[in-house]
Length: 364
Image (tube, rainbow, N blue to C red; front, side):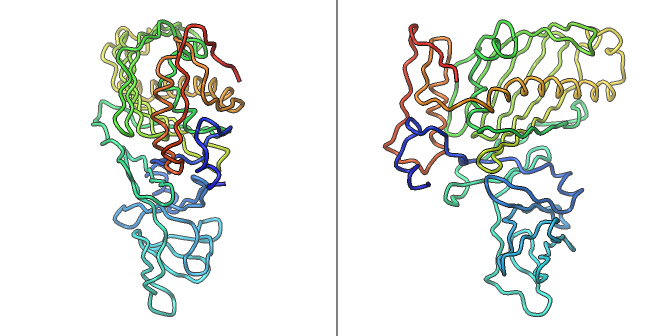
């Protein structure tokens, strides 16, 4: 299958290669520390993650290099004194992947875990998946500044049939914001910017939403989306009416080649104009208002994503797409995505149709 993909371009395959190269979400640091050892299927691989006594996190292949036992907690693997212990023969590994002890013999130097490069942003742990085992080709951004004016991160995860390129395409598909989600006056505020693995998209919109089932709230919103590969989107949202700033991460990770896990993470900054907020809520203590608004924002974003999930699960990848003039920079986005499939031959270029007034937007 891999050889077959190398002979074809994105313009002639019916489905996208399932695992684009890049950084993908593993888990929250606090979840890893609480559970001691976690296991999951990630990018089609069985992996485990744990932390040593100094807080260093390791993400590694789940199978022992000694005789192949799975080392996840469901099989009996454990973390003892900051080291991973294999349930089959008791081999112990540190977070560099080195075997440091065995029960009845010196630790063999040749026995090493396959470990992944990791990065961390505000307690969110990511690992690099490189095509053919390639090392990181680019880095995630530095974490944004935080402080007491920002709420704690709040998150939820959805699993569905999909692909990270399809979910990331929402960052440039401004037309669907109005048609699918009901936003009004959606307007790009800057030209799409691409620099290597980084893509930046800016737009404004307005929205009317019912809060707590009682109040219609009109929002005037500016959004800046920072995309770093196909598994990491970071959106800075400024709601002008009440002076609320929101951070949102959309983290889509392939599970097994068919399913993806999309994790939504939100963080809210203290509202700058609380007296213009909904009657009553503006006078709540700041910590309580933080928690309430964080919950409301996450619930609202989850509702919007579920509107997309219905479509993502049944859509078919179209290449080349039949675009209209209203579709904006989807063609540029498709070209941006080519870099994350290094297994495809460089001379096989995806054909992107030129938008014309007469062309129609295809429906799947």
